[in-house]
View 1 (spheres, one colour):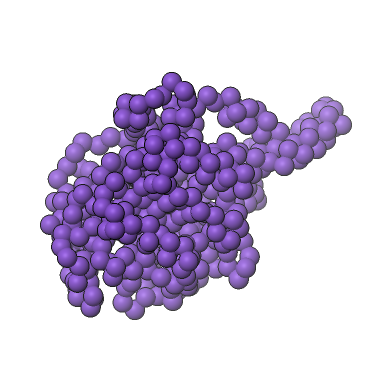
View 2: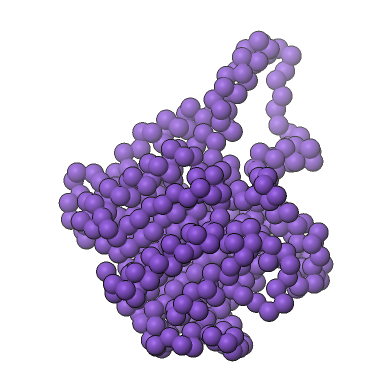
Length: 435
């Protein structure tokens, strides 16, 4: 049902449309008709030999793979905290964090959030606010804020970050219970979240929760001039229309990313800046104890959670589900399904691998969860990342403030994982206070 890049499964089968398949579609459409073809004067034996050699790499980029892998392998990861020259964590973090922010190529001027509450509803054990607020002078972001009715206020605050899922029609609604939930959305939650709305679950546990639509998802999805009226009202869309919309959105990701690049900015820059400003708004709410903030997400939400904790020291605990690996291990086969342009921070691997960012979280707390049957990530990359995260926290002198867990599961945030995640968040925001 859902065709996407995050590798989730439907009826036990991989449900993805790969970039290779997209290129094959382009070829069939004639859009690649200008591509060169070997002429009759080319030595066909050499041509066949090179083609065979390309196939033997086991890589989706064939004969180009050895060159690309060598470039990654030559990276000295010159800002990794594990290098011997870095001894002081605070000094290292200041320089490394500045480097990451610089590579986002996006730094809009500060702006007041100027929230506008559009609706407020009593949901029994919590109050739901639907609102918008400003993250930059050019962006007003839709959000839900869930306020527990029985918690002692001010209470800890949690930023819940929705997943990619190749499912663009909804964003924040993937993690919040909504009235008369469309069946297709309920089925999606069953597949990736064991049927739970995790933002709502956290509100019921006593946290003030905020969740926003990421750029290109939900109310911030891409709509074209000639789209049918139903595309502007998801509840009116048929199952086939939803599938068509999701396919189109997936295929257009590269165009949107290229458009952002051409404008001099990056998709991760916009994404992470919105998340940082979401922390600003949450921390400023009177119901929230700004000394006790956390974040959690699945897939691109897990990636966002990990990066948000690395970049914002107000986050005391982060949970990253379904997005962790050593990046160089992706290059043979896994880039095609996992490192989309929503994730890619250009040039960062020269300085830091993804797990190196864990040292930007220390001495605060992080839980990283992956599934052993998650096809997005090579097993050796996950293992290397888990070991590096442990080493980073040991060097920082706080080994107990990280935990990396591998479940026998596909790409999902299932009930068992959720139980561990909520225990971990409670341990640092309620039981043991702020690290």
